[in-house]
Length: 348
Ligand SMILES: NC(=O)c1ccc[n+]([C@@H]2O[C@H](COP(=O)([O-])OP(=O)(O)OC[C@H]3O[C@@H](n4cnc5c(N)ncnc54)[C@H](O)[C@@H]3O)[C@@H](O)[C@H]2O)c1
Ligand SMILES: CC(C)[C@H](C(=O)O)[C@@H](O)C(=O)O
Ligand SMILES: [Mg+2]
Picture (cartoon, rainbow, N blue to C red):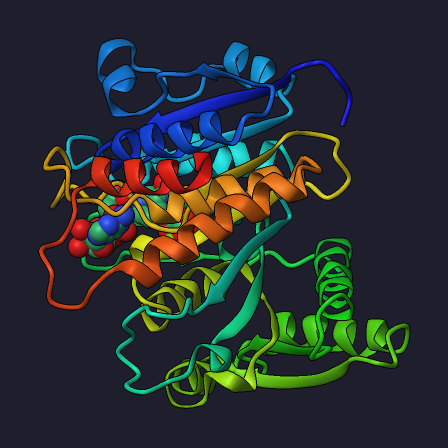
């Protein structure tokens, strides 16, 4: 990596976002890289203070960073969607984060609701499309507030948008030992979008003869995530299916407190953004109960993305060791304690 400091924008956000990001930064500091964090106070408090979600000037500034670390946004005091759409999704869209990378990996020692599942049976990565689909924001409401209201919400799928994420997923499958890719969709009902996704996968597959290609409808895939998670290696899917199935993935791999993600701009034209899969968890915010591990694993993804693979591996190993040391039945540790314990392992 170049000798200048790496510039990291940090958006702790709302609720437990601020708590878990503090621990992620501790670990980042301990790993000893030349990373300079700059904090941005975007989220509910700023919205209430100034009415702003993501001012254009801030968006412009953020574009100049090497990467972004985000906690979570969303708060019950703000109308649904305001922070989620105008802040989080706007960042993903403006920075063209067309790959939303979400590993689903069971660490040894983690308790999963799938009793007796050995860790090697849950090791997949979901490549979720991040800029299109039902998240595009198109649609509308007619006769709103009347008994005759009609609300539509359209799924936007472009040949360009689908092909680039599918190609990324094939590359990812190529780099993994099992070399398997599963398209997850609902081609039996969403016939227009599904047809584009399926044809794209079929066409791109011709360039990757070593990859075993499979298909599963989203409903069946949800069942197989629980009953036969070993079916999956790389999963490629659209924005909404990917959102839903990765919370399920988190659940089978030990819980939402462990699930990391990266919103990637593979071309490097804008900073990629790393964040836990979970949200701001208003039900436990301010209580020091949130597990910061998902954020710490997102920090590992961030380091890897920046080319600091040895540092990333150290963080991931520290997490694996911390998880292995979690003793069933012992009192749960708080957010800061888990952060301190993982930091100590990284430092030591
Ligand atoms: N990336 C994001 O910023 C993001 C992601 C998801 C949800 N949200 C927003 O967060 C708010 C709350 O959403 P939600 O309740 O549906 O989802 P959530 O992920 O915040 O919480 C779901 C459940 O998981 C628990 N949980 C979440 N993270 C945890 C952690 N690190 N450790 C322990 N338990 C944890 C919560 O206590 C809650 O019971 C909403 O405003 C939503 O829009 C934001
Ligand atoms: C908060 C929301 C917009 C977001 C999404 O749907 O992508 C979240 O659920 C996630 O998984 O990152
Ligand atoms: Mg989600």
